[in-house]
Image (cartoon, rainbow, N blue to C red; front, side):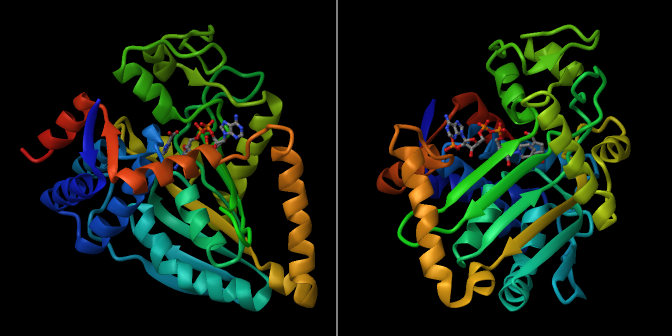
Length: 335
Ligand code: NDP
Ligand code: PYC
């Protein structure tokens, strides 16, 4: 492992992206997303993703300069056309309208279309909980995951994220793939030449495997069997056809073997407790705290607790750890 200051890593990320022709708004939005992942010690969605950003652009599958366009689709729906570029800038551009609409209507949605996607969804969710809003986000990816009871990939790793604002504390946030694990984690096991646990994937012949290379050639499995499978299908539908965008299978066909980041849409749904509850908002939100206390009171941890702890550690030291081989691969992107 190499130790590097977050400041230095931020500058390196910006340098790499500029070197590869990304416009300044994309450099800023992409680097903020990558560094958020790294600061929270999310190895599969931190600076590792820089390799995929550059290779997707080099393969002609991600536009490095397109400026997203924001459309006022309906009183409670904002739509952002990312125009073939990565999603973080599209999210940034649509965020003010999404928040306004949620605060006005009580519930609102943002559909991001035609975006290349690589990020963890909590980065977006936390920008909504910071405004006192409850949020749900999801998107398809590439068809890598077999449905429960099947053996051929249909679904993406389809993340589902949820955030609940808390008055005097970190928000309650969960964010997970509907596959047993994110694909990025299997890629990291391949990079480190480590076996994967049983239950994550099957090989191309449909047999259970612990070999990450065979897993990446075969099919990943859903989490929770038929339950993860149904959630993955729901995400294909509501963040695919419902918003006029691609399913994971369509994204995979569009990729045509380029091995680029997935290209599709994303759906974000936001609710304003103050509009649901009016004068009784504080009274009801305090009841949510009772729920959290009853979870933590018995020694169970809340999702994202590990991340928030990691974030505070990074803020205190200003230092993050990056595998030396990865750091070298990133520096090589400047050649
Ligand atoms: P994990 O299975 O590692 O964890 C997901 C969630 O579960 C986190 O909120 C985590 O909190 C929480 N958690 C983990 N262990 C516990 C525990 N013991 N008790 C309570 N909560 C726990 O994540 P995945 O591999 O499924 O996903 C990782 C990331 O990959 C996500 O951020 C997701 O958005 C991203 N992803 C993005 C995709 C895309 O298309 N853009 C596709 C697939 C995944 P904590 O972090 O604190 O451990
Ligand atoms: O790790 O499964 C994943 C993933 C897909 C797109 C971004 N991350």
